[in-house]
Image (cartoon, rainbow, N blue to C red; front, top):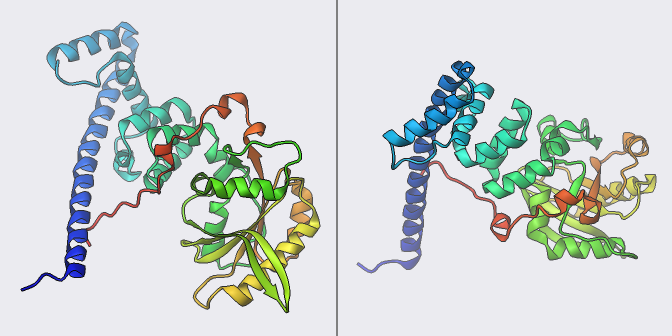
Length: 340
């Protein structure tokens, strides 16, 4: 019997996915055991911390003497185990999926993140996005949790979108967005920044967040013979809707909201299908002008958000040097837990 090439490739793809999945499960189970071991050791250390600093030095030396071929028991690492046990209960390891990231990732979190809620949030995002250790450090240093969770968002999504979509749409917003790969130059206009974003679309998509797919730049819509151009158009596969982005070099003004409202009406009428949710608009400005923006969106019929963005010139010097590597801008890792 002759082998059908298309069917063979499908079978091969399914088997390869199955192998990858099993490898990930083996790694996950090993990591789970490691997390529980580190917590238990850290808890022993915490319970006996009144023995002073010499305790960790002696403990590290004696563990290495008994297990000379096993790494990971330096004085510093033992101190991290103690800190891990002070942040979490042992049951939290399973409850919050803490074994979904490596101990190396956890060390970055323990060294930089102050609140338990933020720590767990970064764990979830690292798993969702497949962040490397360096990318996780970059996201922490860029205050991603504050920009995406803590800071109130300027938007009018409630009442204009279904509840579930409205909540998810708010979660996708950041304030400010950081375009650290774009350097502002004298005389630069919106189109110049737009071109830089498109030229660095992988980094741009990482900053926008999970779920965005690039549709086009200067996306043309024709209304009764008149041409209009949307700066940047995306489709969000989790929100199941188009996202129009209008980019401004100055501060927010009320007419920007009216223009975006028009764009969204045209997209909903001429571009989106019956299967798509209502389109969403995002106006990005160098200065969001918060109160003016809130009043401007109050009575708009379409769902619109307003955020600031920062270019590399706007960042503190210590952040200007913390840029993702080429490894960090690979397409997000989509892990499968079951064989196809």
